[in-house]
Image (tube, rainbow, N blue to C red; front, side, top):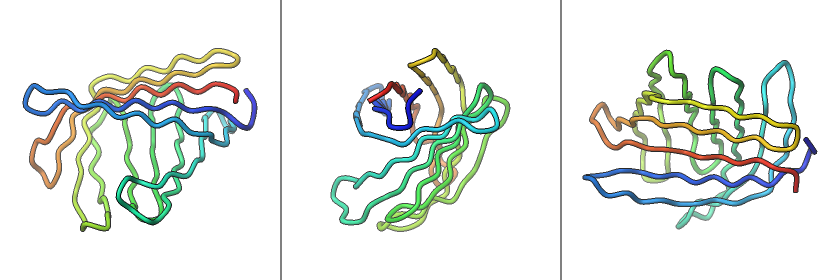
Length: 139
């Protein structure tokens, strides 16, 4: 896989039996070290004026997303355990608990796909069921 990659992320949220989806397509830096895949990219969340630097680290067993900047958080998706994190946003802090229901990694020479299905609790209250589909290919 090349160092510069094109990343497509589709996130779906199911709230009260209604599904809402968003898609992000961006260029990222990719490398693989110690059996882990790494993606690094920047984004500017809608309605915000500060950049968020994202680092994704994953392998066959887990997926970790770290955000630094206008939003600060570290989310861990691991099917073998629930994970609680502190999520700092410009609107204020919150506690998020992630319970991963399904995690799949498909890896080919020039293509990687990650699928994550999880339940999100915000401030210890059930919030929504989510899915993320990430596709990574050379730019």
